[in-house]
Every structure is written in C-alpha cells, then in structure tokens.
Image (cartoon, rainbow, N blue to C red; front, top):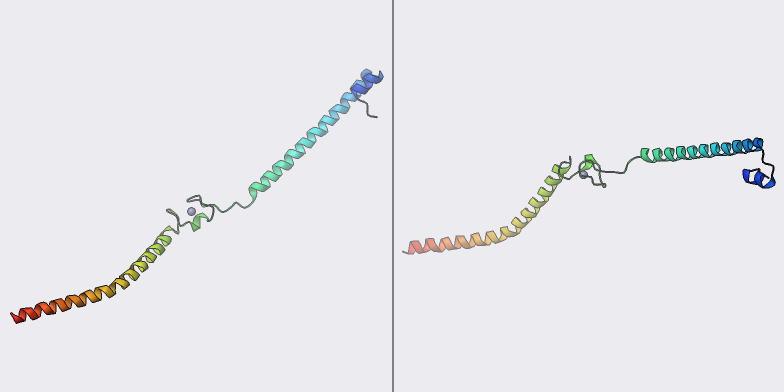
Length: 128
Ligand SMILES: [Zn+2]
C-alpha cells in the first residue's frame, strides 16, 4: 500500500522522516509529470513543425487564388494575363469574323441591288 500523508495521518505513523519521504515521493511525481508535460509539448511542437514544413497548398502570389500558382496566373498582373487577353481577343475576332461572313452575303446582295440601281440610273441618264 502506498503511503501518503493522508494514510500516514490516518494510521498515526506520521513522523518528520515519513513526511520528508512522502514529500520527496511527491516531488518525484511532480518531476515526472513535468517531464511528461515537456515531452508532450516537444511532441506537439514537432508535429506542428512537421505540419508547417509540409508543401504548401497551391496559392497564387499575384491574386490569391488557390487553383493556380503565381507563374500560372492569368489575372491582371500575372504572367499569363496577356496571353489570356490575346486568347480572348482572338476568340472575339473570330466571332466577329464569323459575323462578318454571315453579313457578307447580305452585303453582296445589297451591292448587287446597288449595281442594278446604278444601271437603272445610268440607263435613265442615257434615255434623257
Ligand atoms: Zn493568380
């Protein structure tokens, strides 16, 4: 049975020597607890450091987006921004060109009408 101050008091065997022994025993326990706490703190610190040293998630230094990194940034200020703009411009131009193509047919027919109109005008001029 472990002797504590309480049990020694209860059994009436409490002497100064017993008190010292008991306190020393308690001090030893506290030391161990302290050591355990420090060990746990060290483990925690080690884990934290390991977490911190893990490769960081992709995050853009330019715009802060997490789906790409700085060198891949296509937002204003990023190296791919101009490329993206060019791409978009080309797309726009292509769409515009397609529009122009479809309207070319109309222009042709209207120019044909214009030619006919001028022919009529010329003919009329000749008639006069
Ligand atoms: Zn970015």
